[in-house]
Image (cartoon, rainbow, N blue to C red; front, top):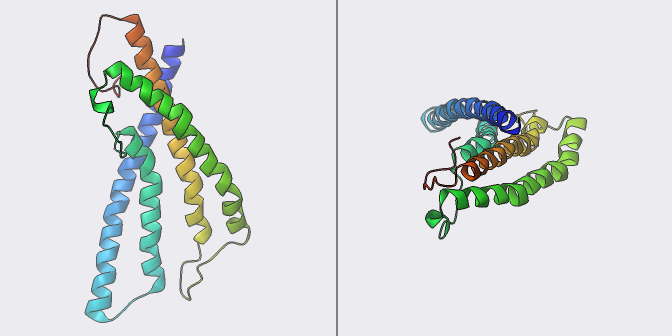
Length: 185
C-alpha cells in the first residue's frame, strides 16, 4: 500500500515540477528577448521605460524561484561531493533522505513562515514600485518567495518518497548492489 501511494505521489509531483520547469525554460527565453529589446531600444533609439527594465528583474525572480524545484528534481544543485561520489547507491539514498528531512524541509518551512507576514503586508498595501513609471505589482513579485518554499517543499516530499522507495526495494533485494542513480524508481 505504502509503495503504491508513494510511487503515485512521486509521479504526480515530478510531473508538476517537470511542467513548471519547461514553462520556466520558455520564460527564460522571453527574458533574454526582453533584455535584448531593452538594450536595442536604449542604445539604438535612446528609448527606455522603467517598467520594462523592472520586468526583467521580475522574470529573474520567476526563473530562479520557480526553477529551484526543477533543479532539485534533476539533482542540479551545487553539491560538495568529496565523499558522495564514492558512495554506493544505497548510501546516496540514505544521505539524500536524511538531507531532505533534516535540511531541505526545515529550511523550506522556515522560508515560508518567516516570509509569510512580509508577503501579506505587501498584499495588504498592494505594494507598487518606488520608481516613477515602475511596475505596480511588487506584491506579486514578493509572493514568489512563498511559491519557492511551496514548490521546493513538494519536490522535497517527492525526493523523500523516492529515496524511501529505493531503500525499501534495496532491502527487499539485498543481493542487488549497483552504483546507479537513486533518481529512478
